[in-house]
Length: 491
Image (cartoon, rainbow, N blue to C red; front, top):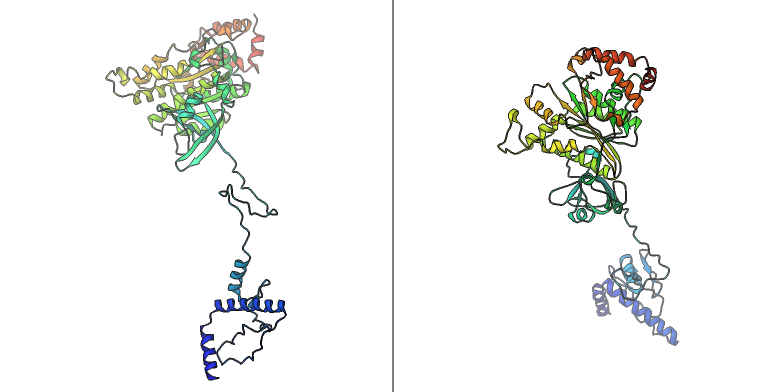
């Protein structure tokens, strides 16, 4: 008996929980088998286990197993007693979860139950970007953001050379399309619009340089309110038409900036169909801000005097290229350029030392590109029109500025001269009406009105410029509109 107790103690010490589970399963299987055959096993007297020892399991007994403690559970299929952790493992072994096939299981048997619902991951919404394209000499391009004033930025969308060649993209086109974001920035993936139109329509547009140039025939009305005499005087003495190439000759402090603001406001009010672009190069930053707030409807392309020379030349060319692309699409464009003199300075400084420097420090070829920019203004027969009103600075004390003015003098078909003596007496607009005028103005003004305007000129011919503008202003103050004033003049 002592040997049995000692053996039982040794067995109970060596029995692990895993063995207990196996034995319990075997006992349950034997019990079920004997119950099915009607046989009963021999009974064995259970002997209480020694203190500190686990009770010996009777593997041959058909008796009901003792109820396990509360921290155990019995599986339904086999009645096996396991601990919490082991029970989970046992159930996992006996009842394996049904496998859901992955996408890579193509061709294999589908073991997914019919009641399962397959939910596809939603595709991400496409991301679109847009901007003004600037194509480099290497064939690729970038979309410049107007919110960043078209300056070069790491956030600009990259356009591959393949896309540029496929759609024959050029500087100044407004591009919109689907983009992809990568580690090196955003890239145009699919092009959807060019200048607001389908890309196929752009292929059939004419090239700007091949368009037929005509004299301006459609007049741009600048008169707005009765007490704004700057634009009222311009409508009479220097009329502007669509396709005009106008030069505003302005000494310092003669009201040039105010005049440009009034012209821009008149174009926005009277001709909303015209695309207005204001190009400011090497201007004071506060003037750029003032123009932005005064004419929010205009497309402002500016490079203030705190920017480098490369920025000045780049933004000037990009603005004119933008205007050309709009003209090719049949649009009418009005460009206010301030100033042509500072653009000439920038290109002169950007020129490499060619060894052909003229008097005043001007390079012999420095005015080649600025002259092309100003000469782009024209009225076309097959497409739209490009009107440019540019300012030229004089009496600045710089010999270079005088040379630049002489380069452009006579190249325009409209010229308006501001007089420093008139502005010193605080008379505005300080226009010298004797030196100002428009070529072929008979194409813009009806014959009857033109005859009356010539009568006004002849009546003021004997006066000095200051007296002439004062008499004209006093005459305008009597009538709310120019039309009513002309009707009152006999003839």
